[in-house]
Image 1 (tube, helix red, strand yellow):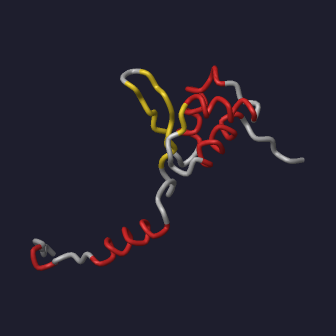
Image 2 (cartoon, helix red, strand yellow; image 1 turned 135 degrees about the vertical axis):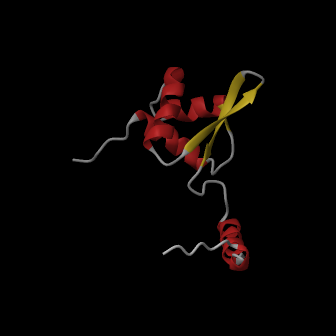
Length: 106
């Protein structure tokens, strides 16, 4: 028997499809309602994504009003080249051990 997707997973798929770009509420509402998710519980779905997955959700605000959401974390929105460059930069840094204090107590 195949496992059915729960509501927050459907919202997560819509946010993943944006590939790190902000998704405005109107667009999110259209896509989610097409998938069978009703938007009156959007804050609950965002909380489920934050707590049950390895992703985070950033609200896009206009003053105090939320106008959209953006999925972050787990390499979303970063190209492979950017990730490779960041890793190479960290690997190229060396630690100068001559400045470390060594305490030899036996």
